[in-house]
Length: 437
View 1 (cartoon, rainbow, N blue to C red):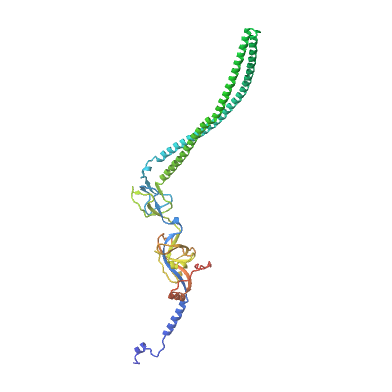
View 2 (view 1 turned 90 degrees about the vertical axis):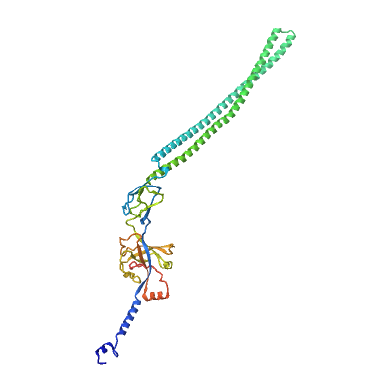
């Protein structure tokens, strides 16, 4: 059998083999591989969004209840800010009058006229009160002057009364003497009678003087009473005028409130008229129309359609598990695979070598957990690397690989075998580094 050539080719007994060289080579290669750098990472999923609220898809609602009159746009149209989207007409009976604003304005003007009337009435009442106070002062001055005159008059009348009294006393003495002389026959009866008449005249004169004094005293008393009644009389008139003034002031305040209310109604009606035309709040594309047809009734606050801005500042929102949250911090790098864009990915430790991935930087890590039990992370474009494709749209899905520390491959294998978590990430200050870690 040793002479057979086939036997010599198949069986190599006693000959040297190359298997050990292959084994040694594979062993050396394996040792070299486990010392290669490995990037620890967290893989997650998310969606494309925008950094700014005004650049996200905006739902358009009807500000008032109404009936659709006509549409100015259709789904897919691109509109500019201020373009008319849809016109609605009124359905509430309070606003059906086409001349509602003009009629309310007439009511407002009438109420303003009434307000002006009451203002003028208050001014007239103020003038009336001032005149009454002046009249009161003049009346009191007049009565006080009259009292002073009566004081002077009574002084003179008292002097006249004193003189008349003295004259009457003298006449009485003379009459007594004449009576005695008449009894003694020294004088005639005619002379006695003449003296008696003189005495009677003196008495009458005294009585007249006394009556004058009494009349003047009574007049002084009446004047004093009248002086005291002046205050009461004019105070009543002034109080009555003040009462009318306060009533007018109350009407003024009431009218002011009604004027403000009517002014508010005119403004509200004018603003409501402007709400019949629903305008585009920003430029964008019209999508997802919720209403169709003409004459359809809509409620206030009911959704009509959605406008998507044309060129938003894109961002990505990804969601991470609570167990991974301590490993994530703003400034970390993350690689993205956008849905619809081809990519060859080394999803493990060499995402930098992947083809078709895009770079981002973590901007915000939210502190509140979502209903799905994950934490939301906002990522913005990293402008130092390849720009994100212009064809991406808000809402499209993405897959993210959050990059952590660079470690040897043997360390990562050892960590996974023992079930240890990845190392905590610490950002570097090296501005020239390929990624901020």
